[in-house]
Image (tube, rainbow, N blue to C red; front, side, top):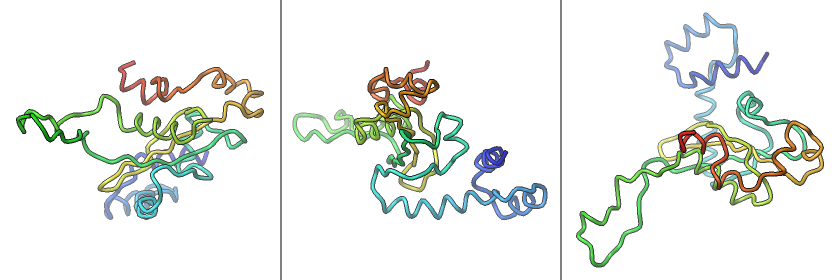
Length: 185
């Protein structure tokens, strides 16, 4: 029941002062100030590493809907991805400067899919189950990635999630939901 209110609050995390006052009068939930909480957390996240393992999900409602369980074998990692388009390395010799092609290239995959592959490289003994958006600032987008240890006995004995033990390197092969969207599947 609480997850329903969290989900509603995350739908509109940023609200102006007038909207917030009218929403607080109309709704009985205490989760209306998610935008200010995320803004405070993002300043801390910016000073941390690119990929950070965390104890529990920031958005428990979203994590649970994507398959996360609070049991052994499940790990959450937060990752930051730089905003903006893709830049290529500069080639210094033998090109007309306008034809070098440094800017205005977009990657074929979404930022979320790129985040999943970076986390998969950081945790090579785990499989990426799914990921979700948690916030952004002026320079970075932040995602949380759900990882599963496919060799853990608690995972192998669970009928609902044991299928992941038969898969290898899902994020690299484009089998996560974010990667499937960028492949138009």
